[in-house]
Amino acid sequence: MITTDFSGPFARVTVANDRKLNTLGSGLLLALAEAFAAVPASARAVVLTGEGARAFIGGADITEMARVETPAQGQGFIERVHAACAAIRDCPVPVIARINGWCLGAGLEIAAACDLRIAADTAQFGMPEVRVGIPSVVEAALLPGLIGWGRTRRLLLLGETFSAATMAEWGFCERVVAPDALEAACGEWCELIAHAGPVAIRNQKALIRQWEDLPLCEAIAAGIPAFAASWHTDEPREMMAAFVNRKR
Image (cartoon, one colour):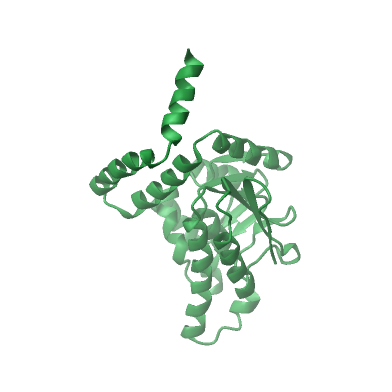
């Protein structure tokens, strides 16, 4: 199942299938997309993690995929993977992947769909799809922008497994900590987000999403109306006045 905690400013979504390394079948994929669609407007950020200490998300449920018999059935399954990733990317506030163990296949695609990634130094990463007769698809297309084309080819074509340290060196993980420091590290990032303007954070995430899809000149130009729109609320005036008064 997917469990949620929406009680505070920092929402938490957990893939709770530790018995099967938090692998995702169709039911969990649909529930994950629904959980992100239900993130309350009051949330400042979302932490996404896996149940237990063994896995973030161990991939898609191979047992279910092994029962696929037609291209139409295959398309239906991968569309559910994409829908879960898209719900994370469309979440209006930052999503932090708290990677506590195995992060494989669809799990790595979901991590790539998040805005920020903190991993335990014991976490392991891989895209082993070609080893079970299928290509890596949908949000695997985000990987070249995160780690470059050569490393993406190595990850997808060779099916190797890599450490958190290597994935941090490549640019996939923004931070790697000891397992017992993982929760505190996520808390530190949430506190930094808490000190920013909530409207500014949402506008910044929306603009970053635009940048991903636009040519460079258009991406630069898109920032002008986004900047001007900040003054639709009192947030800039209030926060800038507080900053100036602190300096005085």
